[in-house]
Image 1 (cartoon, rainbow, N blue to C red):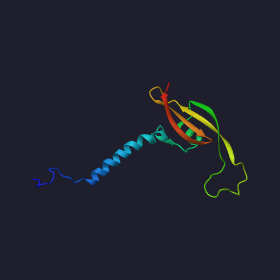
Image 2 (tube, rainbow, N blue to C red):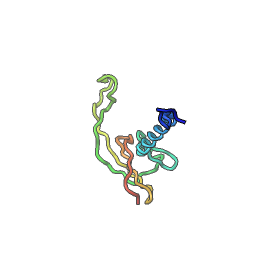
Image 3 (spheres, one colour):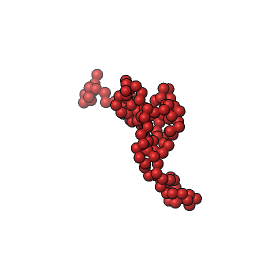
Image 4 (cartoon, rainbow, N blue to C red):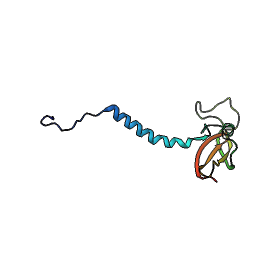
Length: 130
C-alpha cells in the first residue's frame, strides 16, 4: 500500500533494461545503413576498400562494365609531413572510374559497384534485374 504523499506507482527505473532497449534501437538504425557497404556473392562478402581482382574472384565477371571518366587524386597520402622529399613523382594522378553492374536475376535488385582506380568505393542497388 502506498504511503500518504507518495505516488501510487513505482518511480524506480530498471537501468539495465533501459540500456538494452536503447542499444537495440541504435542497432536497428545502424544496420540498414551498413547494408550498402557490402555485397553478398554466394556465401562470400565483398566490401568497400576491396580491389577489382578480389571482387572478380569472389563474384565472377560483371554483367556490364561502364567507364565513367577519371578523377584526380593525390599520388601520396596527405597525412604526416607536408612534403615527402623522398617522392619525386607527380603530385596528382588521374585514376579511372568504372561502374560494374551485377545482374542477380529478375527477382533481385541490380548491384552497381563503383571503382576508383583499383579500389571499390561504393556499392549501391538499382532496380530489379532482368
